[in-house]
Image 1 (cartoon, rainbow, N blue to C red):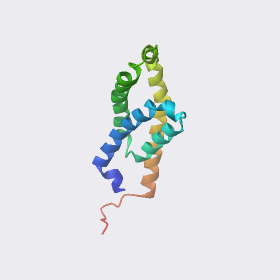
Image 2: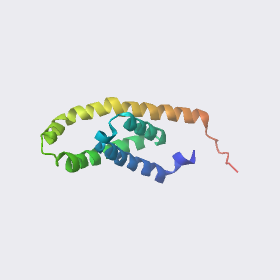
Image 3: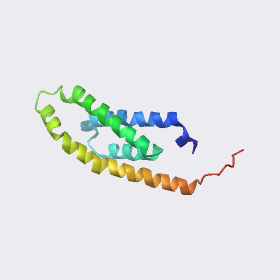
Image 4: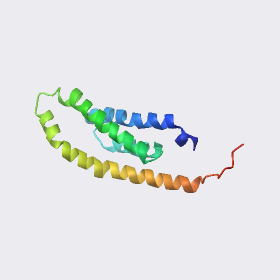
Length: 128
């Protein structure tokens, strides 16, 4: 339980999610499957303490990873990739909300309910 109570660990996890998402999605052609990104997202769901850290990670992902993707991947292309990326961004955001964010919220909520039942608070009793 101390893992979830350590704010520094939770902040590091919240910061690692956008970095990991950028690296994996930037190498999507090499991966060739959605299995690894899905496993990564589920793993982070089990690592976040609560919805606040989930929100921080997702906001960081959008405000850091998307501009980085634009600068380092799309702008280097000679074809119409950048125009397609910009025009598809509203659909990408909506897809993220329904396919990624809502399931992440549900997983974190279910994990927290399970942890509260498995490890009830000690009500002032200290461990030796």
